[in-house]
View 1 (tube, each protein chain N blue to C red):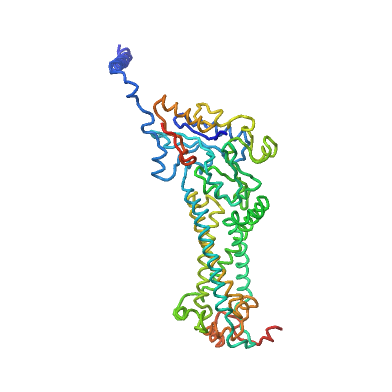
View 2: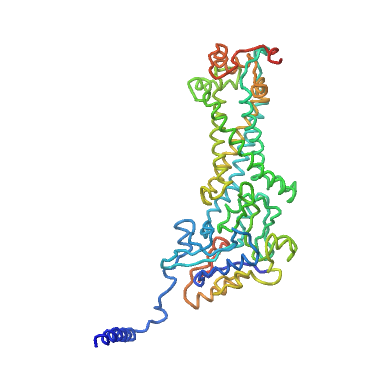
Length: 198
Length: 337
């Protein structure tokens, strides 16, 4: 089985936010929640880079480790998913996550935390693949249809890569070799305990 | 003529500049400007700040934090350290209480019951106490569930039942925090007068509070042990309330680092608070004869008061207490009417 990962080639990202929009539209993500976002670092200064970031589907995921009700699970593809039926909206995964991925609709007590929502790698949730319930809770399940996450598929500069970690790492390495520079695979050290040496 | 010169001069200048550039040696690929030479670098940014923050164009400005690996230390605390602190504090306190009960037994009323009682806590004081106490028990159980539920209860209850119970426990934890906080404030205001440490406490502590042997060191309305419990409730309760509300209303006060710290303070203070309250519950029930009545009916036996709060009883009997509306001891029979 492939180990699915995200890789954002920050030297290509033009901060068009198409990944953000595509994600919101594909999954009908609730108002106020962004499963993916583009962060521009050193904005307007020399060396500025933009990075598209969502849940990185970590190895030994911190969210899963700290969840008090154990609602997370990792699929055979290495995608970290969770059950909104089990989630109690305590906020612990959010404290543990290095990437700020978990978010909560403001429907809980005192308008605080409802059931957690995060990037599913377009892989839905525990419900039957492609079912109506799955769509309503988690959004589309493109992986079950043999498609990759939409954010990466429609990235205009092919900055955001999704797919088997080894393959996308290889693509990135070749790019860096050819153009002679690369600002690194953002988040990989934190998420997967590895970096792509260029 | 002059207009023509104005037009031609920059053109000539541009041609001259172009020739100059053409004359310069063409840079080889190796000498090309490296666009990444000054680009922001993940490792460097993380070393500088321990987090990477930038700018986002979406309305949710909190999402501008790109990376924050500090969650790793928090995870270590939550999954390892807190389990140990909690288990040692609570099980340790239980063990101490069991050993104490088995060796010392219940602290008896040595002079027996006199049959006469004196008001120790009025109805409002008891209401405030029990409101805080019942909230505390629910908060403690639902709070311990968040830390110890997954290893202890989840295997027994199964995913669905445990999640359902935890959801209700969370609701209870959130809602009951309000009466609990009000209770802590009431306790603080109600009993602050009797809980300022003074010289009598030194003597009381020196004599071990009469816990061992048959000693009865003098005490006013609250002895040093009770003062300790009072300050644990006021300070501990204040801390858990402050940090708890910070967690309940995320991002109103602090970002994620603040919430991690708040959770650590909340959890550590809470388990120590629970351990202290176990001792308080013990001494108020099976630990001491005649003690529960103080918070039960609100009236204690005069002999109990003489043994445990001699200075307070003298004061009450002298009728010099300005705070108590019913300072006079009365017959148990008349009180029962």
